[in-house]
Image (cartoon, rainbow, N blue to C red):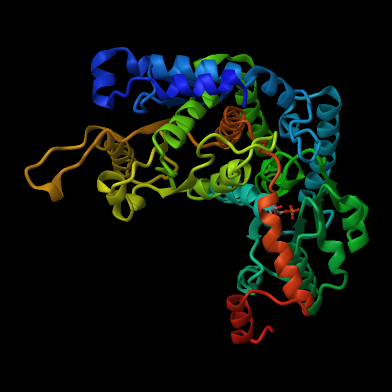
Length: 509
Ligand code: F6P
């Protein structure tokens, strides 16, 4: 670590600690200073969100100290490298070009993305036009980044119905695939096999079983019903998918950043190309904000300042995200992979230990459900959990507007209560308060907003990584378990006594 980075951290650690109450009392303009609106709508369809970080402990002193740290960590250069096709994934010696899928990147990557999108668009239109016969269902088979994005997007955006019903299956547990089978008519079902590598055991096993299901249920040419979404098109063709139904994406798009590529096929098929395009456009607005804005005004960077402060200075081991909207019920699950697989590391890109804690555990759920289950700990537990609230001004439902009013009021009440706390003579009824939260208040949850929200979190994750000096684009931590599972499968190897006993108990030895 450079002396400048160490000095940056020491300056941050030396900042005066003031409570939220003191911070609000000292600065009457705090809400304005620490909230900002970003717009991604069009004239016909306005849309955007307010990003309010005023209920965090960031103040001018801390923000200045973090800005110095960002300078010392080379934030501007790292950002340029990310957005221009530099090899930011140092361990795998390649670029991370998900923004090129949204039109921002090196000329070559943007051109390639446009051509691949065009190919995907044509296939989607052909399917909608009946080229593959009646298609009412899509079983999308993938795992991790090849499933979480499409699942979130379809769940969020297809609540009022879809052109094609999508069933995302990820787990190797056969119950997951069987559940999809019971909802689909084989003659009207397409299978999407989504895998960057086209080798992932869960996905390939599920895909083989899906083909068998089609065959046993009277579909004469099951491979004719398969679309492959992959960065390894040769492997897909070798497996049996016709080249015309292989939708490739570049190797430089990471799995957890791949919703914008052909992995987004179910979104386009279920909701139409326009919705997929709107999602890309919303993300692009955040990309441009991230590229063009410096220091604390850069909202993903500002959020990363708060993230680093709570994880590294205040020792918070988790952070929670509560969407006060059913449409984002899967959002915290999506963020878990994005943040924990990207930044759950222990060494810097240079191979030395990171100074302090890296990614906290991301968890969360939906409000108001979570209030009646886990908020007790947030208000009175012994650990401080920084919370993000995400809500929409416009309701997704058509019931009595009382539903949405109560929902939003509860969301805002929770942030206020966490911050204010309450004294009481009865210790069991006392709330310590001074508990931080941030709020993203969207105009509505449409496709552009979902794209913007995801891109905001992608760049926040990257900004966190730059401040820690780590490479967020590899995931070697998942390999060891896979290797041991393969050894068990191959047989003949011996393991620790506890694992051996489990294998014997399950008749797998
Ligand atoms: O095991 C982790 C992982 O590699 C994730 O990073 C990825 O999103 C997931 O598995 C699925 O990989 P693939 O898309 O290659 O099937």
